[in-house]
Image 1 (tube, rainbow, N blue to C red):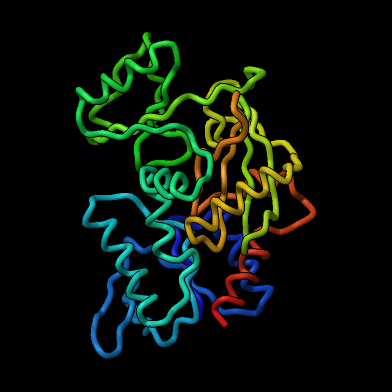
Image 2: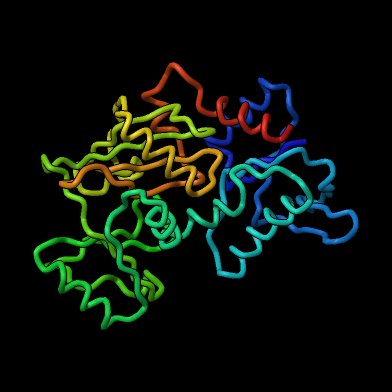
Length: 291
């Protein structure tokens, strides 16, 4: 039996289920925040009044990890760690999810691996934050929640908006130098990596500086350069991912990686890459790793 940990039963989950069905594999949908575990000689998952022994689980595909308190998030990740300790394949693996869900950790790893990423400053000290801002008096900064996705909670910090919304950031201030396209376009690129290969890519063009599809950006077909492909594959590899959505922007100094997502959506990129089935490619790779 295979499991999909998911937060909803929408388009992405249906795509995965169809891919499992094409491989004639039994799959069950599980909401991890409604799951209990039994820790003993015969560990089990308890879900909807059913018991699923770990020894009956062939692999777990992680489609969603919900937010929550620190304790809740740690517990959800502990379930994945426990499965891996019991030799169950988790896809993406737990450690890479931990690395990528935390933007600070992602920035540190990319920087340590020589992968170009925006200049970043992180602090819990407001006085240090003000000193950092003073170095960029003529340039905008982007303030982001360290846990977040789909462009939610992003702010431009400049003379018109000198202070971030402290409370929404939970008192951790993560600022990056604003990447301005040489032609002043609001555009970036998403490259989808599976098993160290870029299988799909798209351009995202927005009407504002936030280019996420969830924020209304348009998806367009795009063929990446060799440099962009190398950046995407190296970024995915640095974080130890089986599959990843890598976001790249073009600034005055060339291409830079702005995000590496270990649980990426692919509805937008699938809409402009009609000659492949992204879910099937991922599930085929997942099943090989399980075997």
